[in-house]
Structures are given as structure tokens and as C-alpha cells.
Length: 459
Ligand code: FAD
Image 1 (cartoon, protein in one colour):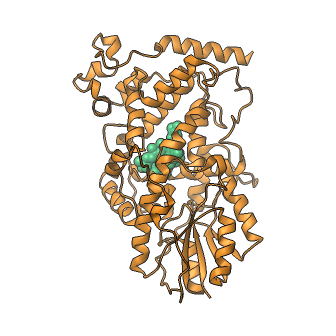
Image 2 (tube, helix red, strand yellow; image 1 turned 30 degrees about the horizontal axis):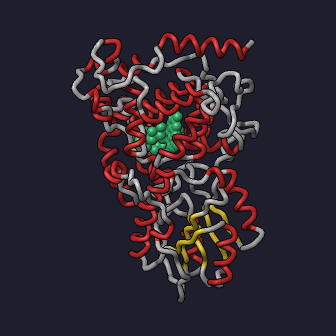
Image 3 (cartoon, helix red, strand yellow; image 1 turned 30 degrees about the vertical axis):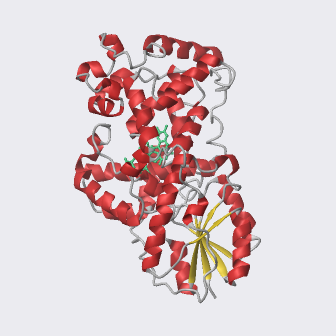
């Protein structure tokens, strides 16, 4: 009897415990269901859909090498899977356990209908499993990371299993039928240039990153340099597992490798926070950060215009604008610039982080429920950690410090001819080209406005 492997954000064959277990039991039927109903308002954004199309296409090719087909369907996952089990006579369904609240609910619903076996493998260790000596989950990153590192062990990632095929394949939609790509306008040209999906491409990308990993600690902070792995979409969609990356750097004693492992731990940490506090990505963890603090783009026209300027990369702050344009063109933004741009929205523009989180959700190819929400809470100072709202990042000195000149010139063509000291703040230097907007608000004024608003809610 065949076994169904239900795929979601785990689109790979190696180190994939669901494939591994299913292949040992019988012929394997891999299934991907495009389900917009279960996540409801959390359904995938446009950039993620574009990436998913590429990822499914690469997976189809990989499966074909093993004479397997990818069965594509649309609809509510638990219903579609229930029907597929009947149609194929499958003995069971195997899947990796997911932690988004809507997937947890769907897994529960499905377990009542079919013989569902859930396996671990989305994270270095299962969220919720790394706990303090007293058995409680960690809230703060550094002790969490230490405990994770102590527990992780040296287990080797699983190989690609030997597969057998079902006598008859169920019908499948064509990938094009899922309509994941933009039609008119086609905004994906920059993304096509930036990304190659698939497990093989992920490994190639990692191999080239390993050549520069010794400089990772310093270079990952510099947006003009390609100094980080750029594997976040591949990790999000599971084309590569964090365990596979961990194993490849485990014996590297260099500082770069240590810092890279810490970044993988941030990814686990984000999922742990959401496992602990399921509403973490929806509302501020700290009480008091309510509507009195924020300017509301839904009711305040000026705030709406500011939000738009931020989204379009027209704030008059070159580093913020370069980041927002990189995001729009390529579906990705450098981590340091994500922090600067996010902080700018929340503190300079006094707009609720959830508006930014939503925009990132729609425009990032690596949009990840846990990572996006926890990072926005962190930047805003509303989360579990001690990053404070009153610590306000100065975008212009950040731009100089992290040497963003080439980065700005690349993504903000209006400023392409400006030399280094001027490109960070052309308005102040008196050389702002007419085509480039004035600052939506001065830094000092924004800072004072944010501090005053904060004082008002703290009273
Ligand atoms: P590398 O430096 O090579 O790090 C390796 C991997 O570690 C990354 O691919 C990623 O999976 C993980 N990682 C690194 N930093 C973080 C972090 N701070 N939190 C969680 N995981 C991390 N990352 C996402 O994957 N999805 C998101 O939706 C997302 N939203 C963010 C929103 C904001 C406001 C900020 C400040 C950060 C966000 N990040 C998000 C984290 C981080 O910016 C990206 O993971 C990183 O830029 C990806 O680049 P890289 O693959 O080259 O990272």
C-alpha cells in the first residue's frame, strides 16, 4: 500500500524524515496542496508565491530523477488529503511537524481523519523541546542558544532514501494551474535574476558561502558585500535543512562558523517564541504599546502617505530607501538594513510594527511567520527581550558605519553619481538631486516626537 508524503515548507528529499519513514513502508506519493483557506489572512504573500513556484518546479525535476511524481492539488489540506487517501488506498500520511498555529490546528484535524505520522526536521531541534533546568521554555536568546548548542548532538543528516513507486499515480494539477506567478504587471524580473530555487542550487550557494565564511562575522554587516549565506528562502521552504548546514560547519573552529551557527539558532529561537506564545506575531508582548503610541495610516492621511513613502523607498533617507527598493526588486533585504528600515517605520514614522510586518510578509521571498514577527517585535522594543523603544537608531550614522555607499548607489539610481560622504545624506550635504525626495521628517524631530509619544503612554 502506498504512503502519502504531505509537503509544506520541507521541499527536499535529503534529511527529510517524512520521506525517509514513508519510503521504508511502501511506495511513496509526494503531495503538495496549495491551501489558502487554512492560513486564511496568513496565506502566502506575492513574493513567497513566486518563490514557491520555482521551488516546486525544482522539486518536480528532483523527484523525476527518482521516477517519482509530485502530485499538486488545491483546497483545504485536511479535506484534500482525506480524499486522496481514499482515492489511492494509501495506508498513511507522513509529514514534518509545522509550528504555525494554523498548521498545528490542521494537523490535529487531519489526525482524526487519516493515519497521520508527524516527524521533526524543520528546525535544529523541535520548538518547545529546549527548556531550562526547571523544565520551562526559554524567553531570552543567549541562554536558549547555549542550551540548544549543548543538546544538539552530532547526529548526521538523513540521506535520500531508496524509493519505490505506486502502481498507479493519482491525477495532479499542473504547476501553472496553481497560478503562483504574477501576470500583469510581471513584477518578478528582479527576483528571477536574484534566485535559483531547489536543493541543488542551495548546496551550490552554500559551497560558495563556505569559501568566505571566515569573514562572516564582519562582512554580514555590510550591505554592499555579499557576505551572508542568502539561504533564507531555501531554509524557509525547506529546500535545505538547518541540520544539513549545521553538519557542514560543525567541525569548523573559525569564528565565522560560530556566528553562522548562532544565526541558525535565531531561527530556532523565533519558532520557540511562537510555540510558547502563539499570538506573538499578532500583538505586542509587552502591555501598553497600544493605539495611543502609533499614528494610524487608516485614519490619518499623513501617516498613510508616510507608510506609502516607506513601502516605495521614497523616505529621503537613502539607506532606508535602498533597502525598501532592494526588497521590492529582489524579494529580499540585507539583515542590517531590515533592522534600519524597520526601526525607521516604527520610531521615525511612529507607525505600528504590524503594518511593516504585513508589508514584509507580502514582499519577502523568505517571509516566515515566526522570524518575521519576532524580529519586528524585537526592533520595536515590544517583545520579550530588553531592546527598548527609547533606543532610537540613527539611520544616517548607521549608513556611514556600515559603509552602505555602493549599496545605495546600486538601488537608488537617482543617487548613483554621488560620492561617499554625500550619498548617505544628500539633503544635509546640499546636493540632493531633484528626482530624489526630501526627508519625510528630520531625524531630530522624529526622535523627539517618538520620545514624547512614548512618555505619554508610560505615564
Ligand atoms: P545568514 O546571515 O546567512 O544567516 C543564516 C540563516 O539564519 C538565515 O538564512 C536565516 O534562516 C537565519 N537567520 C539569520 N538571522 C536571523 C534572525 N534575525 N532571525 C531569524 N532567523 C535568522 N528572516 C527570515 O528568514 N524570514 C523573515 O520573514 C524575516 N523577517 C525579518 C524581519 C525583520 C524586521 C528583521 C530585522 C529580520 C528578519 N529576518 C527574517 C531575519 C534576517 O534578516 C534574515 O533571516 C537574513 O537577512 C537572511 O539572510 P541570509 O540567509 O543571508 O542570513
